Image (cartoon, rainbow, N blue to C red; front, side, top):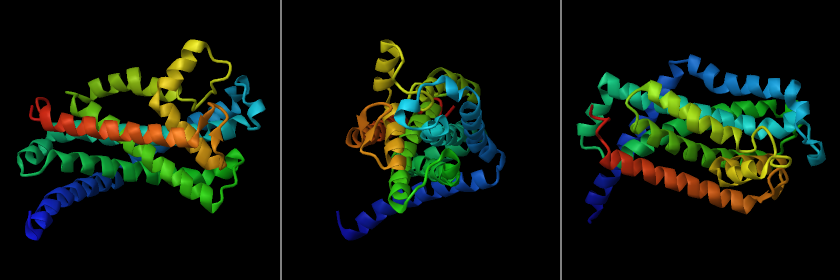
Length: 270
């Protein structure tokens, strides 16, 4: 492949991906209600849990208040909710005819996946970054290293959950079906990730489910980054293990999304 062909291939990939990502961000800026849904809901739950039923969970031996313990889980919630709301746009694009135009255009399926996931990830990390301003409320004092590490963890987890959201939304015929799957799969993934209660005191079945849940490693990675610790005491997971599993989770979901976009166009062209 000569240089001109290489530049042409990159243009066919990067320009469509950038355009789709930019469209996703522009759409978000025009729909202010999505900010309330993605940030407001986790914030309300975080404050209610911390001020209400937080005392029911045994986190004192971790040396943290419940607000501090559940703070990484609130960030993970924002990333997940943003991914959910962003990927619903795939179904909306199909009903409006936009997705059919994209699919018949000379655009690679890889560009479609990268564009949608990149746009949703930028929105997710941006909203979660605003939530970092509430760290003092949780009793956290973040230095530069903690902020940089937390941003890296948020990027990894957001790519993973946005990839998961894309894969699910691409296979859905309606937003109602997407919400049904969300309630059955995504919400339990978040609840059983250590975001709201630690493994200690849970039944052996719940502990195994939490260890098999890839979200658990993302939440642990966020907690390690925020606290500047090499091990998440709530789960016993080390930062290296958490990084490895989260990267693997992201790669698997991106690969699944690309495969779905390449082969499963039954609903996308409907």
